[in-house]
Amino acid sequence: MSHEPSLPTPPRERWPLAVALAALVAGAALLGVALGGVFTKHSHARLPAPPAAPAVVVMTPAPAPGAAAAVDTSAVTGPATAAQGQQQAKQSPATQKADAKRFTINDRTHVAADWVSGFYGIYAEAQKVYGVNWLLIASVHKQETAFSTHPTTYHGLNFANCCAGPMQFNVTNGPVSTWKRYKDSFARGTRPADYPHKTAKHPSIYDDYDSIMAAAALLRDSGAGRDLDASAWQAAYDYYGHDATGVSYADEVMARAIGWGQKSFCINCLTDSGLMNAVDAAWGAPARTALDAAAAAKDEDAVALAASKKSSSSKSSSKKK
Image (cartoon, rainbow, N blue to C red; front, side, top):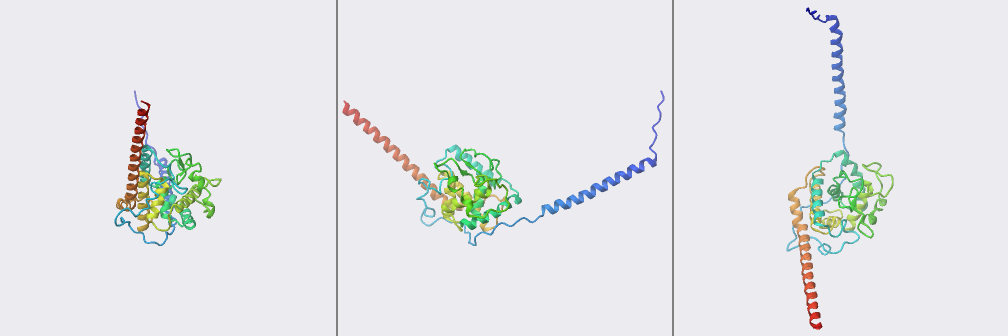
């Protein structure tokens, strides 16, 4: 069986194909250069600068001489006031553990600079209207929802079914919830023209401006001001609630804000452990001591009450005989 030999393609037929391929490669190269220029230009676009913080010297805190006088422990164990207790007065151990994990994740979550720059106008307005250092407000914002990037930020309630929105306001405590007390705080300022999540109706717990302005008012009412000091720590402690996790919460919020104040606002920098230790020694440890003392006193009262009831029951039994 004979096979017909394959015939080579004539040169005149290969030439147009080669030209077409060369043109295609050249076009792709030019397109790549053009797109590369666009993307390079976009990636190096100048972002807005963070707002200016109050002109204060941000000191690393040190324990007060002779004891635990650096923080107002009179408010540490008492009942939550209108400006206190974002969370319920007492969280379950499971909830406290879950919260601690959430705060660690939020601290380590990488957030794009152009996204966070959308909040600068709100931070500046909150600082202007309520006199609270915007670094403290931003630190709470990162602590609660990693700058509004947590998946549940803009809908529903959190895992504990108590709080919602960018600043995690409590909507279930009350009878008048923390959110209801502070939801109209936005009205004192001027709403920026643009920011990440603007809702159609106001006030909304899911609107970044409404929520952040409410948080600034709450922090102000709890004693926070331009300084990153013991009063600011107390305000952060009140923001979460009075328990052991609340102490750690306030330590981290303040250490982050102080670090930003000493260096510069750093969106994705981890909280400095050295500053955390310093803040805890100055303000966290006294609060923790007060919590432990209150718990011990409560246990003693419970033991005394049980003994009193037992004694009364014994006397009653004796009389019946």
